[in-house]
Image 1 (cartoon, one colour):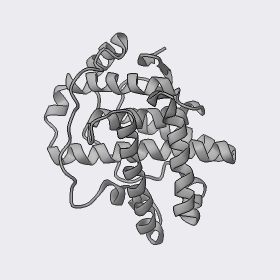
Image 2 (cartoon, one colour):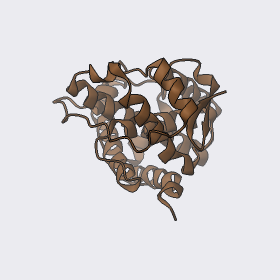
Image 3 (cartoon, helix red, strand yellow):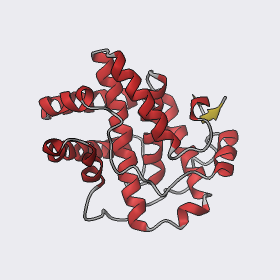
Length: 231
């Protein structure tokens, strides 16, 4: 089995593992609260529209670009910031779940040969998880590595990225990795227990999250073997 063929299986195992670790919290996390109820989504990073369009035309041509490193963690983690959107009594436990998602994302990095802390990998996970929610369907396993390469090409040629503070880069990396895992986990939960209202909320949330990073009409995005394309 190739690494590319294990993404959905890995995400499912992560979801199942979280149910074992935090059965009551995960039940609330994926169901009771609005999936759009994440705080701290104020990325300074947004893809450059010209470079994004070029990369979409070129597909995964940037797959051999060097990793895009991030700085060490900030004193207050992104997990704690994202948890601020939840009721006060739930924030500590929710932050714990988010921290676990970030740790589990490191397994995805290892499995796909992504350098630890590579910003492009986190952006790809963010895009993949949100595309799952937006389209209400699994992300094609074999397309993930191509998506990482495409995002790496976009980021490496984006002058705005170079001007972002190193600590903010790490903060955005953590937020994107957590949100990508969060949205993918929502779809795993819905596959086990369908809920039309949650499906609608997750799709609407995914549209908002993607719009924060990707220029243009996100409803026109499609996933291809070479990465994202605009219809």
